[in-house]
Structure formats: structure tokens, C-alpha cells
Amino acid sequence: MSLPTNNSEWGFFGSIRDHADQAEAWNLAMTAIQTATDCPDHAVRDFLDSTSGRHFADDIANGLFAGLTLAAATKAA
Image (cartoon, rainbow, N blue to C red):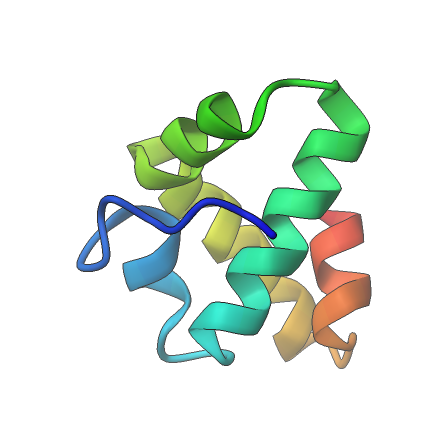
């Protein structure tokens, strides 16, 4: 279970809303980043809630536009 966003309007959560289910995308992103970085969940949440999280969401959206699934686009980002 991943931590909920503290920034539902901006950051990753707000930016992904027009491209994918926010809850599914959030959980995939939290898991992927934790796996790749071994950072604690609160650090991953802070990253996703930041401007960098918005850019991460943009990278996922680009993958979706290219025809990737949400999981594949998240992994690629």
C-alpha cells in the first residue's frame, strides 16, 4: 500500500489525471520508484508531489501517447 498524495492538484497526481486513472498511476509510480531507488515511501511521495513528479507524469503520458500500456510507460519513465 503506497502513501497517498499530499498534492492532488499539482505534481504527479494532478498532471496524470488527463491521461490515466490517477490512483492506478500513482500506485504504479510509487512502486516503480521505490524499486529503482530503494528510497522510503515518504521520500517517493515527496518526489511525486513536487515539480519533478509533474515531469515524471509527463514522461508517462508521452509513453501512453506512443502506445505503451500504463505499466510499460511507467517503467520506461
